Length: 278
Image (tube, rainbow, N blue to C red; front, side, top):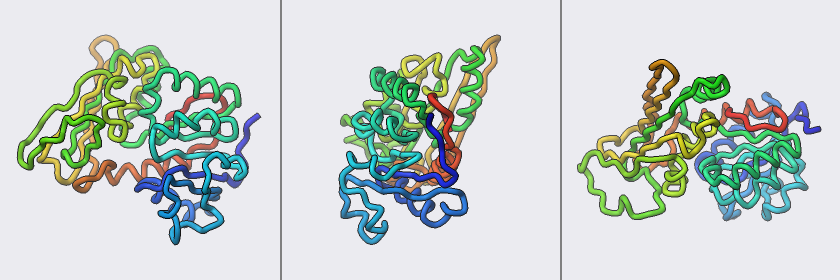
């Protein structure tokens, strides 16, 4: 049976902005919270030199079992979730920082099966999603009827796989880039819509195909990202939230999301064989 030791050993996969932030927090504050850094991996290990102790740098990700982690945190790219997710779960609890990967139905099901098989927890951080636990509770009670998430950002903050924004001009205002199912949206903007993916995980009865998402480019949003969530239930019930997340021009991730991720890491204590929104 999977257990968590009193001092939880954490491996961090990815050293972009969020990965770097999490590593710094664990090294600085982890001991007081029962967190120990087991390893850090980055596709380019040279970027870790001087910032991470040499003994904590993992050169080959496939050798992660030797570090004996309690929790592995992925904060790099959906492809890593696809290639290593089930293997991570065979050795540790796993926090998916790129939940847009779960829009792949086969991968989603495979990771859930691995979590059950190895009695591990597949964690999905709330990130910029406000009210995720409330959505999950409505879903679990059978009262959830619909979820819609709109993310609006300055065009410089989007990282799209297509060329939908290749012609943007400063001052052009608002442009809807996509509106449809989150399942369709995730492959288009895998680095931008993890908030929507988290909503789809929370709304398990609806899933990625029935949770609706919309991404909007708006040149007026030079200081923050806007995330709007509308949840509907029975008998005309509805809740709408609007979250303004401070963000610099060109930033994929708003500043408040960093502390949200850190809070998620602290609650990953093992819930046994399930998917858990944290």
